[in-house]
Length: 166
Image (tube, rainbow, N blue to C red; front, side, top):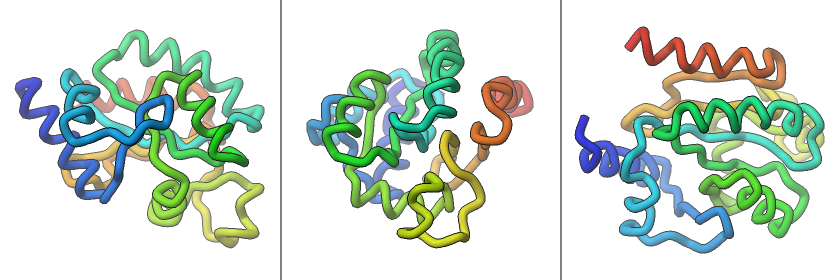
């Protein structure tokens, strides 16, 4: 797939999910700016996490190494942080795109992933807590679910293996 076609594909993913992408600093991205961030992307994934979460923090050095080895993967941060400022700071530290808190709420419900502390808000019907990754297909649907809360960094090799199977 050409880089332009991949870029349009990822913008269409954001559109399918009805997402307004934000930069790592929290600035709203226009379609053109999003396209610039996604230009060389091979795959897009939602990263469900929180800065206060010890498992998330211990998972992230492995995630950073994975991202360095797979620079064509775009992560979009779906925050379970306690404040918008914590979310912004966290996305900036991770160097990832993000979604605003209202969109994060909808994504948590859709993919049934939220932090244990959010159970009073969302109820008991989650399939996983944080950290977790949902790899998206062209239509913005789930292609692969990676339960890092349970399986830790092993999920990253599972993700890489899925490229060999495709």
